[in-house]
Length: 255
Image (cartoon, rainbow, N blue to C red):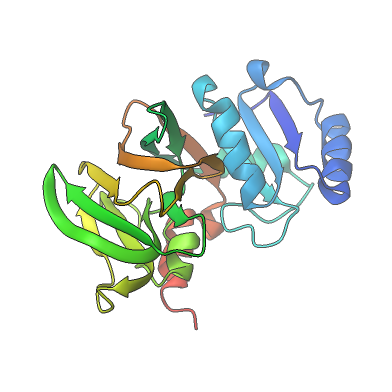
């Protein structure tokens, strides 16, 4: 595929903004709605915002790191951008869909590229039951929270919570507890991506819990359902020598 019309988007930092201004002039940048490809400048947060804001366009997104970690980003280089884009490899990701019901009975539906997480809001630990495909698998886990991560998100919050790294193409999602107190020895589960996971918050009025899909938070939830949304697809571009599959594999051998 040939990428001729490029849209440049920048994170709200001086470094990213300067790069965006320079590249827009150098490559005659266009509006995202008219682009063959979107170039996101910043870190992983900028990449997630770009995916969420423009997924409906189905336009491939190529990230260049003007942030900190940049796990989802390519190296920043202003030279030969058209050539790099045309050589880039495409990774297609299906997000998770979170459907959360709060204590007022209101339903909130959002998607997550990285993870959906539940977290206690007060000093009291959360008490959560876990159902997988409507079968009770964990009754009343006492914890700081719990999360469900995609393969792309498995190296983010999930990894920090001692969850497993998932190589791409395995059709798996990670179910990972966050600081569990009871049961202490449970370290989570790997589930097929088509599984439906339901969390029921016990004592929800006293043990307040929030639910977050990437960066969208719902406070005071009583139940949350998480499942893969195959009707939505994010298309990410990576340089052949820095593809996402290799990065996820390499991360499993990092100390």
